[in-house]
Image (cartoon, rainbow, N blue to C red; front, side, top):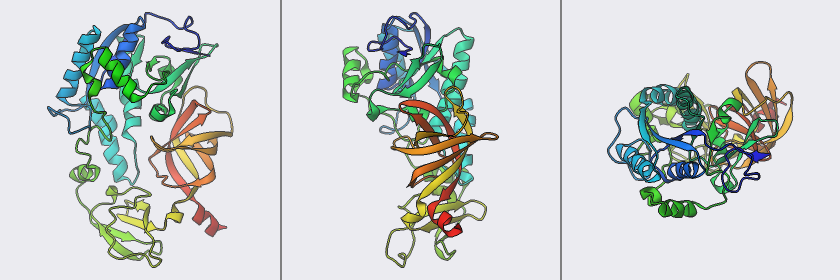
Length: 388
């Protein structure tokens, strides 16, 4: 197997094609700028594009949050000028609002915990953007994600973790199918470099974004106040916080403001009888109730996930994999099996905590990304024991 991009360090640098027409998505940050520069240096015909995803962009970022401000588009343009590539700004604000922001609000309203970064990669960067790029005659879309596309001897492609696990972002790319992988380019994924080395490279290349803070959290919630953002769109709706017996232990201003496994900010007036902390166990938007209980009650031994997307051919039957349940989480061993209809059933070798409907589960075979699905229901260890 060989890396499909042809960057220095690929196992067989003579195999990959050169001279592709590449559309580089440039957020205005250091990673995407270095990725575009590496693609151009590798001999590809690169054009930079900044995605305007906000209908009313702010002039300046709030700290290190967000990536959709006027300042960011200007930073991206300056980087493109230094690299020596054409640059455009594409307005995808309406598509972003419909596919990412509205979906985010609706999922929380339904009591689920979505991951907007996965949805953005699926619907915006590798659907709307890629479709438009291919229609204009480009061969690939390049981004600053840390992941690796591997070209196999039979011509198919696989998505693998980045060479540096500390920076790996394959989890948020697990929604890509084989067709999208065939047109994806990740120049940063196959290099064992620290973020400081990436910044040093940007400085050597004369890119002014070398010292710019990384964006983080949710880009369309610039101040980081997710609960405030949801309250603005969904309003307040006072409800009860109850324990596992159904006894009222507190109140809230909207069940959407909680996530499974949450401990802080519960505002429960009195401690549990055993004096131990309580965690959010369930969220019921139907009766606007949040259920809390001991941490042991969070143990999940199995789940059902829907809308699976496979990075290649779908598994034909049950298999043993490792799974990642959040962007910065570790791996856990699972047995997973696609079943009739768009569904995936997963059993954990050891109980895991903090698993919430709406989250994505991404399956791995070694470093290879097998696919992802959206968690629909979970089976708790405590309930399974009670049922037995």
